[in-house]
Image 1 (cartoon, rainbow, N blue to C red):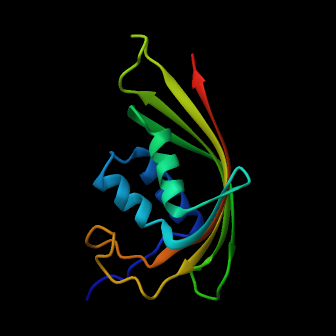
Image 2 (cartoon, rainbow, N blue to C red):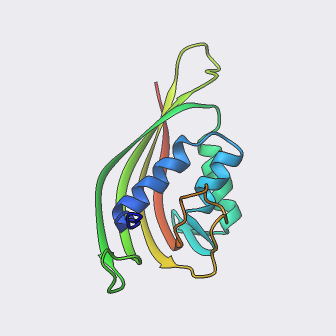
Length: 159
C-alpha cells in the first residue's frame, strides 16, 4: 500500500516556490519554477503597477541577472485558508522576505551582491485543468497556482 501524498501548507507552498524561483538556473529550471507558481491568467501588481504575467517573469529574470547564488530569508508569513480541506489547498498568503544575490561577474573585480526586499500577498487557487506533467517535474504534481499577486519590492546594491 502506498503512502498518502502530503501537500505543504499554503505558507510552505509559497515559500518553496519563491525560493525555487530565486535559486533556479536561467532557462528551463527557472521556467518550471515560475510556471508551477504563477497561474497562466494571474492578475499581477508590483509596486502599484499592473503587469502581465510575461512582464512579471521578465522582471524576476532581470533581478537574477549575473546571479552566482541566492539566499532567500523569510521574515514573516501569515495564511488564511479559503476552503474546508484539511490541510487547506486554497487561500491567501502574505509574506515578507529578503533575497541576497551574489553576482557571478562583478564588473569592478570586487565581489558584489544585491538585496531584494519584498512584501508579497497572493491568492492561491486549485486549477483542475492542470494535468500531471504540465510544468512540474515528474512526481511533483500540485494543481495549486497563484491567481492574484500583489508585491511591493525594492532592489539595492550592497557595497
